[in-house]
Length: 388
Image (cartoon, rainbow, N blue to C red; front, side, top):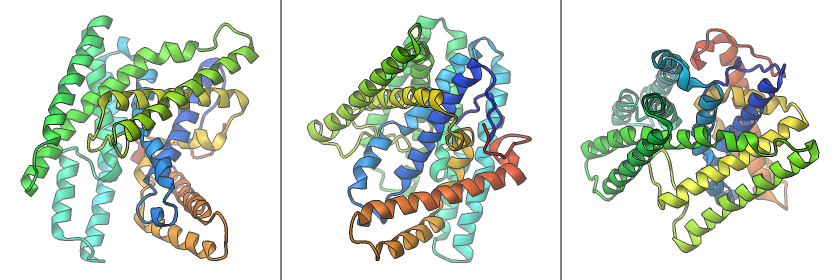
């Protein structure tokens, strides 16, 4: 979700460097749509139960992807040689300011539910205020402080350590965080206080895992960037396509291993740090992300994909507004109304209608925020056109 060095909502291709950034934007655009699709669960599974497998696939890499891309952009922009304090300041403005602003909006929604509709108890308000202050994050907003702290940790390590030492430090920290997390997952949290302490521990551990995926992107950038280089245009595309499909096969194979051999329901959940088998978790996250980035590189050579670029460059705002339960309820009602006239493929149609309505709503919200409240995305001025 980090800024690709371009203005939100507007990308102008003038050189190969900008084109290279464009395929990151396309990849982020696809990924953020997958995030929306992955979150469309709950009641919709009653009408489309087979969608659960699509969601399992999406959850196998959709969060690690953003951290991996963050590491690639750190490598691309050579942030290692920049002043650490200025990097932290820039990231705080671009990530944490939106976090606090969106959190305020979310709190007002809770207040509305508490005093107007009266569908939540007062304890919900206090818990969510704690989530904001403790950086655990309300709903999908957990992602922002995790990314900020993970990036800062990674930047600190690579600036203070030599390359080999940095890798060793990150591996040691990740293993230590994993051991602690496994221990914490086995404890019994039978009181509200214990739950809050556990959530604080998760908040402290998340950045370590974010740092590890950021490192994967940072050190894997050259591999992705050089794939197909030095070949004719046709051979290069074929090579990139083959490598991307191999990555997808590895990703799907890891999911099958997790579900069929290890008997887990899914790969894991980054928010609550449910990682099941850690090795499979990293294989699935890295291979799925590599597939998406390489496919997006091919797409960037075929066309401009304005809408995907728009979503990619506005992925932070997209993340903040897409998970609206009220709009989802309306979308479900609309889908069920249409479904009563259908006799075939009802589940598929239902899901597509809901996705379309949620995308329309999210697009409108992005345009409105970019036009009237650009500071919500950490920017002073935002171009709102879907242009390329």
